[in-house]
Length: 220
Image 1: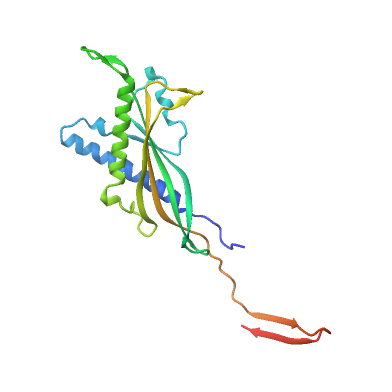
Image 2: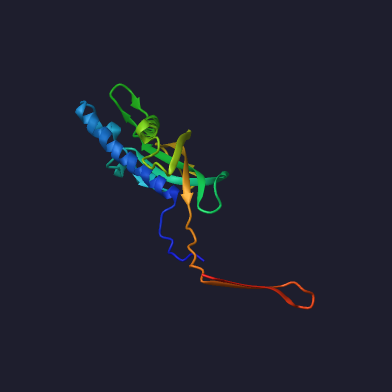
């Protein structure tokens, strides 16, 4: 029985939270750089959430939207463990999948010369958000996500475009670009700390008539 309270985060939780921290910090930096370069900093703005299932719902009522910047929801999907790496006692190597769901909304409007399609605007904004997320995560400085000793490698899995659904119907003018990342990292488990042995008494019976053949006693 484990003698100590298990009060720690697993590796996949540390990686998930670190991914969010990296993105939040770098997006703020990119907005600063954009402003310094005379560019529209809003084109580098993304709002981040963790483990949300419906972050995009704030885009449903388009008349009530006050901030049209894309949303990125970061969530852990699953983990697999390679039996050829690690050991059965303390450390196992995990391969975890993390999704970055980049949602964007678009408004249809007339631009004076024609029609601006809201669905196209949503798609382009979602693509832009996913582009920023991928470039930040795959930047050389983030090779180990700042978790050397825990993370061994991170690699893109895929990029997929989706359209959210509500009550079985696609939601108009909202597009999601999902970037999936595969991360190899360590997981460690609590170790048993036994008490110091003071004495062992062992009696072994071998004879058919019950005669004691071995009687051993070991002191500390």
